[in-house]
Image (cartoon, rainbow, N blue to C red; front, side, top):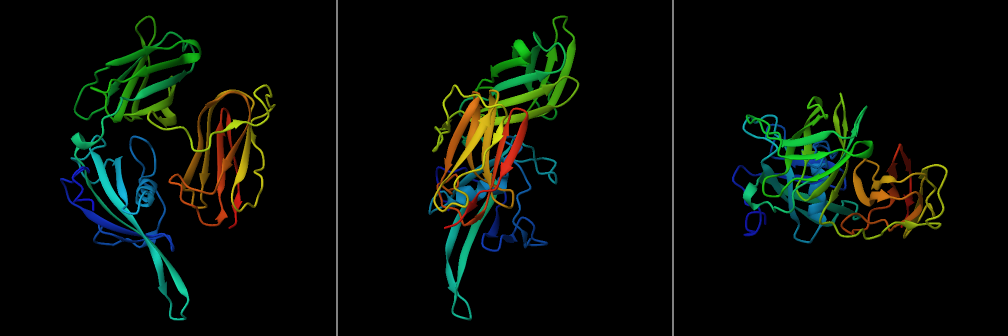
Length: 342
């Protein structure tokens, strides 16, 4: 399927296959490592160098996206290959196979496999889209009025600080990296004061085309990506709305117990914000794998409710069990454990 799609990212390197057993939660076969074949727990560890997302989770989502499966594009620097880097996009194709087979005692054994392939993709065939949009906060002393410049970080090339913005109140800045020149990958940044002195330098900042990224740049410290939002993303399927009116400002931020709990069709998750800022509400399974993002944006102070219908990002109904609702908000993070029972 991957190789016959004329509109897909055709491979120009070696191809390997893998098989994931979702029922027993193991990687039963992984031909990228023919000397050991795998057979180990299905736990995501390798992340996309640009977005920071788990590549395994993206492949599983692509497999479940349609009956014929789907492609996944990602950026990863193979540490065993000196010619490889995160600027070269990788591609894969995965498809889910489900069913049953009969045990020796005549009972039914569920079958749920994901079969996939991995290979190199050609950069020219990756969708271009708008360039990265950066919203950064510079942390430290005297952070207003700094000139912050960004440059691509490519091995063997000097820095060309082609994009810049001046920080205003509280060290905030916003800039757009042009689609023609800017690309997904790693970037460097530096900050200079009014006297032309460099007061901050940062490296290995992952930025992605078509995404708005919020950064924290600490003077004398490192850079941290705190939020990534797709510029082309549609409105959330279930949007969070103020629970008790916009005029109600809670004294403390955090989660309230979801209700009902346990639940068998849907549950309401209530959270409070004592101050405005970025909020992210994500549902994880017990393996720590994200299965649904309910909220990922800035919100005003207030109380909100979000309905979760026990479905994943692709709209598929999840299996029964305990899940973890994680809320990150300005100044903290809190979790709770919804129990889904069919």
